[in-house]
Length: 272
Image (cartoon, rainbow, N blue to C red; front, side):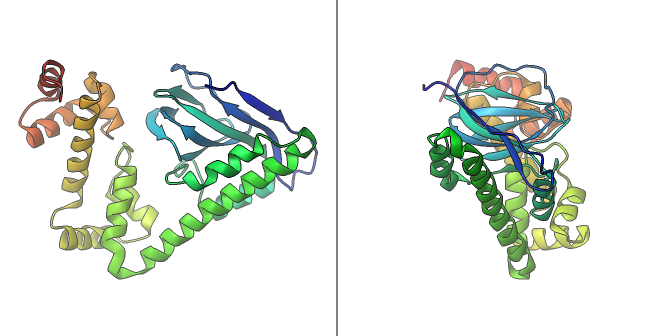
């Protein structure tokens, strides 16, 4: 694996603009450590492998092509898993705050999947001459904002089409099932639809209730994690969106006919 690359950006005091502070390519393996806060915003692009973001008491899986943000004063840590490397740009400035508010980047919406097309542009930025590093890092940041903004606006346009509401709800649940706070209330709030309408339209088009569907995909993910070698029930429950491991075990047994520990033992003895 290549060594880390870090560009420090010349400082300027125009707080109404965007000030990028450094641009780093991080390749060193990172073990889990207690979350710590930074004094700046940071946008990260996962270049390869898999890892975990520990943020606000949750552990969220990361994979190549993900873009995620961290925020001043909010503790976080990043843990490496399989061949994990990522790039990040730290930044400040009121214009950045306004852009993030415009495209709905917040502490409750900060991981964006499917951003593989950004990889080449980010990679090119590491090879720029030092005297152009401020222009390049700001260009990458703004382009990343515009890329995410397009995804957000496209998502909003799809929501406006009533024919697609059930699929939009399904996609939102599929993308956020690992969030322990995911609920009918949070879905209603984020998609701007009445809770009763969401429940009715989802069951009508999908043939089962929203909570039932959520439990199904969470338990499916739990089985995948177990087959991949995870053996601690509490960790598996958290990774699948269950804050209560006992409730997770109850649901798991209902769906699989066996408790999680029994399923783990069966896969340990007879791996597929």
